[in-house]
Length: 174
Image (cartoon, rainbow, N blue to C red; front, side, top):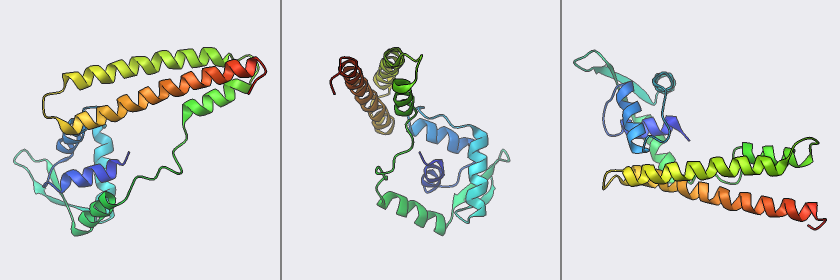
């Protein structure tokens, strides 16, 4: 997830201060990925250093406002125009954990699998409840929650597949 690009995109709507950006980001993502306000201001400092945002005075309460620069606008436009790379995905902690559990003595890979399935189903239920509780017309948050629901469903299917593979391996089949 690119906090940098998310903040830049929000600033394309107009100047904002850090906490406004945090709130807008969380609202758009259905509060799925909460941001630490310190992370927002650290990111804003880097964006300012790189010439992608500039300070734009203060609001009546004295909050420093930031606006996107022309360079920042081009950066966001480039981000919109590029697909998210999927060929070199980030390391998947669960896949690594299961791969190691299968070969290490004293680790019950099936137990690891079952604990994960329970946690994933719980997450799936949470995401589904959040989606049902969204106000009508909150398309942005709904799309984010759809992605989380689909990912959890896919993980459950993958865990089922892993369990079947472990059973076959235990029985000497591939």
